[in-house]
Image 1: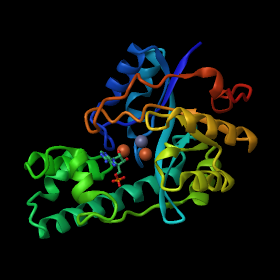
Image 2: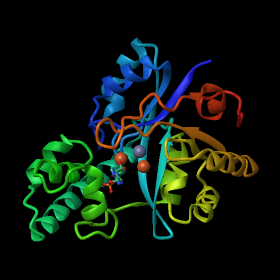
Image 3: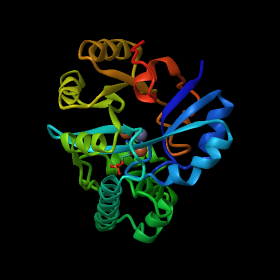
Image 4: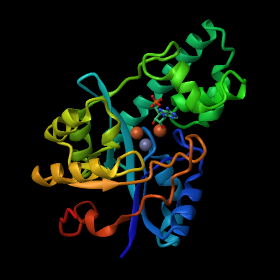
Length: 275
Ligand code: AMP
Ligand code: FE
Ligand code: FE
Ligand code: ZN
């Protein structure tokens, strides 16, 4: 029996680990099926695919897409698409450009509020990858304006807070069709965190998303059970992963979620099975 972690981040988006470190740490926890699901960026896959092969780790192309649904920011995980697909590459590229512009707009807003962080530093922290609020948060921490990334979100850059700026998002149906056209599948990330999720998640599935991420540090056991059943009754599937970001979040989670290979047959190409 092999184990999988299908939700990880690297420094190509808002994580702090290198792609190699993700592979090594996952393997040290007995996880040999991995997807690096950076926000709007596939760079880690290309960087580390041959290394993963050498290490006997099956690396599945993945990406996390911010989608707009009924005014809620719903994250859709996409997997096992053709990583060389030009349409995907083009869309991800334009989302990364929008993220960079939004990063500048957030720095401007924060500077007007008296927080003297710089665009240059935020870009440096993003290291050429997808710029995200965690990079802005880290810049605020470095300058001593807040004690932690979490405090930056709570006080200044969380949704609706004074330094927050909206970012461009996919429509769910469009994300589903772009990923499907490239041979891939989709899953609703961390279902429990959305406001009114018990109403939203079924609608997202009905919009064409294939699965729900029921194994996740922020999905309690009761929700895992509820969403596994919900998926089953709709003829859909389940996925799971640690959503590790390295040192950005309160704790490193890589290794804490190990999904048995058996439930991922539908995604890995084997016979479909739910649990
Ligand atoms: P963005 O995509 O730029 O809007 O940033 C959202 C990202 O910030 C998420 O993917 C998480 O990685 C991270 N995030 C969201 N809320 C928090 C929080 N309260 N503390 C730390 N990180 C967070
Ligand atoms: Fe993130
Ligand atoms: Fe997410
Ligand atoms: Zn994530």
